[in-house]
Image (cartoon, rainbow, N blue to C red; front, side):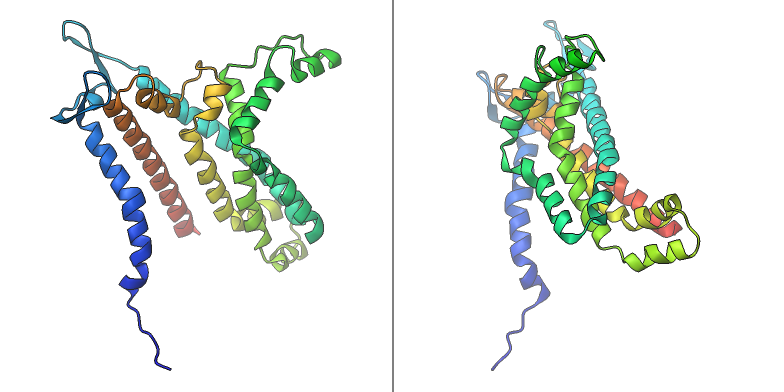
Length: 294
């Protein structure tokens, strides 16, 4: 039987075609749209190029044409970065103990815990955020529970605040932190942990010097899987924030929706993409330095 020889470039062709069609072409289209002028009735004026969309990120013009600095959009980008970073930190604090507990269970019990972690994926994200509206609203279950315990005096007025947005983001993306860490912990050779205990290390030293360093790839993957979609989140800020904690995802939607300012929306999308790329490059450099140091 004659063997079929294939070149590496031919094997990589399907993946390259996928990236070109579904990544490079859309990004190129967004770059082109961002360079166009807004149409008289919204949309774009095809063939009329300008840099007003990028100018609007930092400056605004009054009726007389005078330019002044405008920090509103920078504040929204910084708020998005802050909420994404806080959400990543909270999910990390909650995810590591949960994954450690799951990894310490027998396979049957660990499978059941894995099932519980993935249960939220069975329900639409929109429905889950509407459920949080019912929980966090004044007079809701949270208010009633705190009133019954006497811890705080309701109403708490949590709904439509950055705190409510943070709660929704943490709940939505927590499984994305738990699962990669759990997979990394499952791959650790248990003999290394036993050897650390035999050498006299206590539980804290085994955790800090053996378990967590070996689980670092899973922790880094979880942080990326939480931070990247959280930065461009739309549903939780829209429903739980009520427009009071506007994030860049909501701003982009508003430009392509009600405002019909497609060039500015495309420019914002490119800024979001640039921020994500810079974040990933920073994480890669930190990881490379840690590997070099070790």
